[in-house]
Each structure stands twice: as C-alpha cells, then as structure tokens.
Image 1 (spheres, rainbow, N blue to C red):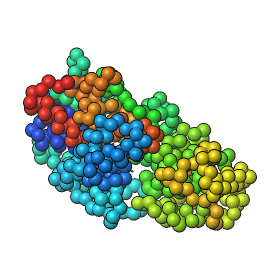
Image 2: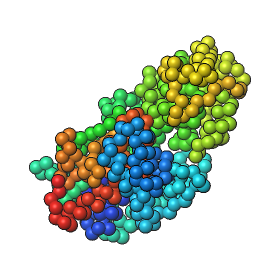
Image 3: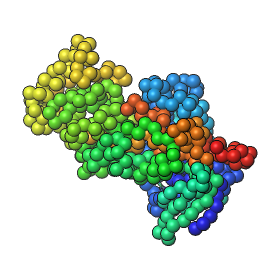
Image 4: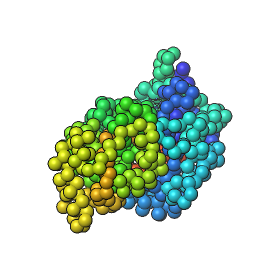
Length: 472
Ligand SMILES: Cc1cc2nc3c(=O)[nH]c(=O)nc-3n(C[C@H](O)[C@H](O)[C@H](O)COP(=O)(O)OP(=O)(O)OC[C@H]3O[C@@H](n4cnc5c(N)ncnc54)[C@H](O)[C@@H]3O)c2cc1C
C-alpha cells in the first residue's frame, strides 16, 4: 500500500483511538495502525479496570485542585506544563468519551471511582475483560472511526519516514509485505516499552524474566525507538506503574492482574529470603513493586502481616485480596506463631522474628524513622504484626506499563533535547513520559492521560493543518 493521509496513528489503544477519532471529527483523513490481528486485539486499554481518575481523585475536580493532586502524587516531579494540560483537559475528556458512546457508572461515593467505564468488571480475581467497559469502549471508538471515514489498518509500524528533520509518514508491514503510509503527521500511541526485555534491562536495570507482566505486554518500545531515532527527547525511563502480585501469577492465570496485593505488603512488611526488610513499604505499592523488581532476588519476596490486616485492609481494595486470592488458588501461609510461619515458608525464624520485633517496637514507640530501611507512616499507615494467626504471602513485582518514555509537550508534540518540537511527530498515552515516575511511585492515571493527550494532539494537529500554520 502506498497511500497518503493527513495523519497516521500508530497503536489502537484508547490513546490512539482517541487521537484518530478526534482528528477525523475535525475533518482530517486518518489511518490508524494496529499490530494486533484479532478482532479484539490485546492491549492494556482493553485489559484495564476502566476507572478514569487522576491520582485517585475525581477528574471533574477543578483544574487547580487537580494540579495540586498531581504534584502531590508525584512528589512535585511531574512536568508542570504537562500536569496543567492534563488537569485542564481531564473533565472534558470524560465528556468527549461519553459523547462517543462510552457509558460510565459511579461506584457509590468512592471519590476516584466516579467515572468507571461500564459495564464494570466483576469483583473477581484474574483477567476478565470481554464485554467489560474498556472492551466495549474500544470497539465503539473503532466503529466511530470507520464511520467517520478513518482507515483501520492491521499493520505494525516499523519506521518513521523523515525528510530534512520533518516526519512525513510511517513505514509499516503486515502479512502482505511492506507499506509506506505518507502523512502530514504521525501520532505514536504504542503503549510503552514494558514488553521489550532489552529496553527494560537497558533503561530500568530490571530483568523482565523475574517480573510479572501485569498487562497485555504489547508495548514493545517501537515508538520510543522511532522518536529517539529522529532526535526526540526521552524522560524518566527508570520506573514503571505496577503492583505487588501473588508470585503464583507465573503459573496461575487466575491471580493476575487482580487481586493486587499492595494492601497486604504496605500495611504490614515486605521481606526477602533472609527474612529482612529491604524497602520503605509506606511509600505505596507502586514504589514497592519497583523496588522488588530491582532487588537481588525478586522472586524470593514475601508480604508478612497479621490477622487484623487480613480482615481490615485485606478486604479494602476494589478487588480485595481477601477473599479473592484464596478463591483463585493463590498461596497463603497461615500460622499460629511466627516460628511456625518461618518453618512453613522456609524463612530463617530467628531473623524473621527480629525483623518483626524491631518493626513492632518502632511502630509502638513512634520511631519508624530509625528502622533500616526507614518506614514512612504516610501515605500508607502501618499496622503492627501482633494478632495471630500470622500470614505470609509469596509476592512478586507486576509491571503494568512503563512510566517513562517519549517526551511530548502539552500538545503531544515530540520535542528534542533542546525543547524544539519535531515537525509532524506526536506521541500520546503510555508511550510518553514526563508526568509520572520521577519519584518512583507517582501514578497519575493511565486512561485519563491517554484520552486527554489524545484529544490535545488531534486538536493541535487539526488547528495547524486547517489554518495552514506550518508544523513546528
Ligand atoms: C490490568 C490493568 C488495569 C488497569 N486499570 C486502569 C484503570 O482502572 N484506570 C487507569 O487509568 N488505567 C488503568 N490501567 C492502565 C491503562 O490501561 C493504560 O495506561 C492505558 O490503557 C494506555 O493506553 P494506550 O493507548 O497508551 O496503550 P495500549 O492500550 O497499550 O495500546 C497501545 C496499542 O498499540 C499497539 N502497538 C504497539 N506497537 C505497535 C506498532 N509498532 N504498530 C502498530 N501498533 C502497535 C498495541 O498492540 C496496542 O494495541 C490498567 C492497565 C492494566 C493492564
């Protein structure tokens, strides 16, 4: 195929479908490339829980409030220009999705679950996406694009076409061979680099084989490689969005991507094979998952807690560990004493008791700072490990998507190290960096980021093309 479009979008997740539809809505000719060949191809958007939120806040809060929320969640490390752009767009992003036919429900008064794509997934363990809100929404967006005259091409984007520093299209391939798709602009929306073991090792110093892929694994860093190849800036590549999962995930598909086990490990403690703490659990599950992934043995990690945690925070998550982990066949070791817990898990009893003793004492004496590693009391408040039965759950790091990536400006334009936008090149969604990840933990919300910047990129592009402003 040799064809010409106003815009070619690479990636058919929610970011790419938003950009493509918004561009077509404004009269541009659009091709959207998706590498997946199944009718309902796998991608993180389809697997997602469907909650549109900003750092666990309602996206309809005022932009000023949302900027504060983003700053707080990222410990002030989010790019302020991107934070403001997201905060200004999030509310109308939800309205736009609704106008496209997406349905939302709200879950009671839970502040961050006021916009959940419907029908919501059931409260059960495992992967359960067919016919759920995100799946229905992606299919609706695909139908909308085709109705607007957009082309949905089942192809893999391979390389950017470039003339004198300007992006003029995308080379792609499918079973028929190679294709050149000429375009006035290309939007990269391929979802991150979590599925590329070499990039994960190079940029994050993590061995992918010892981390559970907590998503579709379809983001292989193609966009990042292409953007880098034309001088695009990359930002904050070190961290990923993810959670603690049962270590059984590697052999039991029923225990991932839910329940995530953050509540157990962050309210109690996380220990290694030596029975020692090695991470500040109070900084939250995303931070802990990142630390586990980089630890000496990511597959020898345990969450240790007591009955009060199991019956309290263990039941609190959207899809809680209690009782879903056990129902799905996940390993839970229960013991009347710490001695017995150690002997069943193979953890060294004396060291484990010392670790728990030191933790309990520091908690009781308000001396958590003296622990090594220190234990923060916020955002996750610790609970003692004192009420039997005691629990140990084998855990691992689950990587959902990479926080860092291509640095795009507030309009989604890919910029060089000097901050100059690259003509005709945009990037949106999880393939971009700059908002999250600077602090190792700050999750802002993958879906809302994708939809908001998908809209912004298409609007910028349309304004430039229709007003004949040169792309720069
Ligand atoms: C289990 C789970 C639960 C989640 N829950 C939530 C939630 O409740 N709320 C929330 O905000 N976020 C959630 N997320 C995160 C959210 O799903 C993502 O951040 C978001 O969907 C990213 O969208 P995207 O379009 O950028 O990427 P994706 O959805 O990953 O789409 C990228 C697409 O690009 C395609 N692609 C890749 N390379 C190429 C190529 N070279 N050529 C052509 N196509 C290519 C891929 O096949 C894929 O279809 C969750 C994620 C998971 C996995």
